[in-house]
Image (cartoon, rainbow, N blue to C red):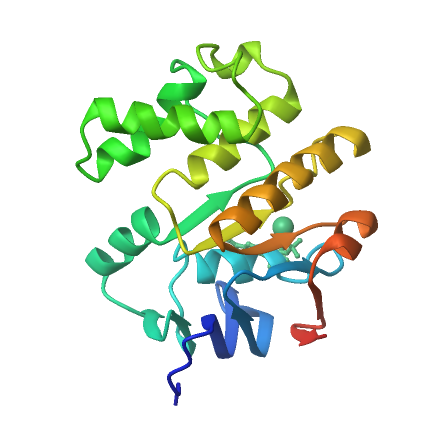
Length: 229
Ligand SMILES: Nc1ncnc2c1ncn2[C@@H]1O[C@H](COP(=O)(O)OP(=O)(O)O)[C@@H](O)[C@H]1O
Ligand SMILES: [Mg+2]
């Protein structure tokens, strides 16, 4: 059951997940349950291989759930129909990965505009919003550069701007600063914090960086397949 709760954005309810290799079963998540409130910035920590990416992929609808339920804004999103899934992924959930996954042949501003055009928004409005988002990330002078011409921190800031381009309700970030030096990592997180505060976005961030985790509103720890808060 999922009682209606206006303040809640995410409800992960009794989620278990296993990978199968032939007959071998690898139990990764065991009865994971937690909730996120609107506007929260929460760290997800845990040893390597503990299932952090698997959990994010289930919430981000990159993986189909067989046991348990995930609700976004009180609506069941996983498991759900493929068409719905694509729609939710494009409009309601933003994803940032450790490696930026920007499109190399396009400029920063085009990278941020493209997901908006995929929803049917025209180019002019998409570019206008992309311009605003990149300015929020302090990238005024880098908008017309391609990813290969940007530093690692700048690339991640573009990736964050892109993830926010369709104004998602929830941002999932899987070790977004894992590839950056500590100072640059902190700059990226500080930019993210500003945007979160401004837009009331909810953010779940996987990180190994203790300093970053300590800056979050809350820390969820994944250990032996379950959440220990
Ligand atoms: N596609 C897959 N097929 C089989 N096993 C996988 C797959 N993806 C991850 N795993 C395994 O599941 C476990 C959890 O992986 P992952 O979620 O990536 O952990 P983390 O992100 O915490 O490092 C690991 O043992 C990993 O080897
Ligand atoms: Mg991982």
